[in-house]
Image 1 (cartoon, rainbow, N blue to C red):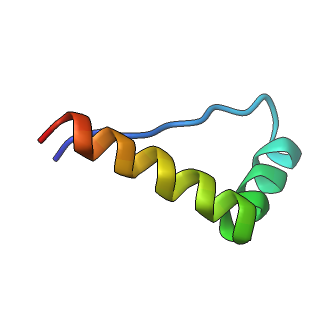
Image 2 (cartoon, helix red, strand yellow):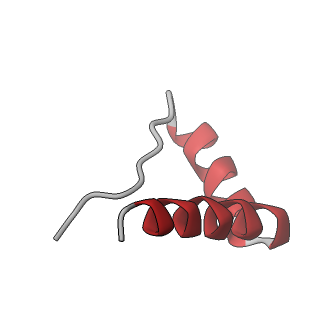
Length: 43
Protein backbone atom coordinates (compact mmCIF):
# COMPACT_ATOMS: atom_id res chain seq x y z
CA UNK A 1 0.00 0.00 0.00
CA UNK A 2 1.23 3.48 -0.88
CA UNK A 3 0.41 6.79 0.76
CA UNK A 4 -0.73 9.09 -2.06
CA UNK A 5 -2.38 12.19 -0.64
CA UNK A 6 -2.47 13.93 2.71
CA UNK A 7 -3.70 17.23 4.10
CA UNK A 8 -2.95 18.46 7.59
CA UNK A 9 -5.20 20.93 9.39
CA UNK A 10 -4.44 22.99 12.46
CA UNK A 11 -7.66 22.14 14.28
CA UNK A 12 -10.75 19.94 14.09
CA UNK A 13 -13.03 22.73 12.85
CA UNK A 14 -10.71 23.44 9.91
CA UNK A 15 -10.44 19.73 9.12
CA UNK A 16 -14.22 19.27 9.12
CA UNK A 17 -14.68 22.30 6.84
CA UNK A 18 -12.08 20.91 4.39
CA UNK A 19 -13.67 17.46 4.49
CA UNK A 20 -17.08 18.94 3.61
CA UNK A 21 -15.53 20.89 0.73
CA UNK A 22 -13.85 17.78 -0.70
CA UNK A 23 -17.09 15.78 -0.55
CA UNK A 24 -18.95 18.16 -2.85
CA UNK A 25 -18.64 19.17 -6.52
CA UNK A 26 -15.69 21.59 -6.65
CA UNK A 27 -13.70 19.72 -4.04
CA UNK A 28 -14.38 16.33 -5.61
CA UNK A 29 -13.31 17.63 -9.05
CA UNK A 30 -10.13 19.04 -7.50
CA UNK A 31 -9.27 15.75 -5.82
CA UNK A 32 -10.06 13.60 -8.88
CA UNK A 33 -7.95 15.86 -11.11
CA UNK A 34 -5.06 15.75 -8.65
CA UNK A 35 -5.15 11.94 -8.32
CA UNK A 36 -5.44 11.41 -12.10
CA UNK A 37 -2.38 13.59 -12.55
CA UNK A 38 -0.50 11.54 -9.96
CA UNK A 39 -1.40 8.21 -11.54
CA UNK A 40 -0.51 9.41 -15.07
CA UNK A 41 2.96 10.42 -13.98
CA UNK A 42 3.58 7.22 -12.01
CA UNK A 43 2.49 4.55 -14.48
